[in-house]
Image: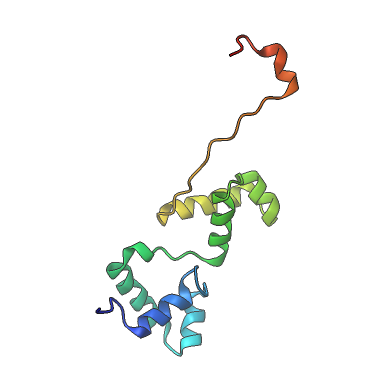
Length: 123
């Protein structure tokens, strides 16, 4: 079976992709002994060949994405990460622009004792 990308490209991809090392382009270039422009060019070329493996998120974006995708809301993520809600909202906007969409689950509705007097029909 023919490879879609070279071994060098694979090393670059693994160095930068959030599911592997999650290094910045500059850090990956230093680690692999390449120039920053070589790494950027290789990533652009790979994005055309295997678009399903992109976008590449920063470690911080990946962390926030995982928290939100795990069911936390923006307030909870902001509190956990020690940032403001507007910062998390900004991250969500950047994630949407990169094509990462969160699977938002509807909040579960549960009965509380105080609701008894507000019920009009019981099933």
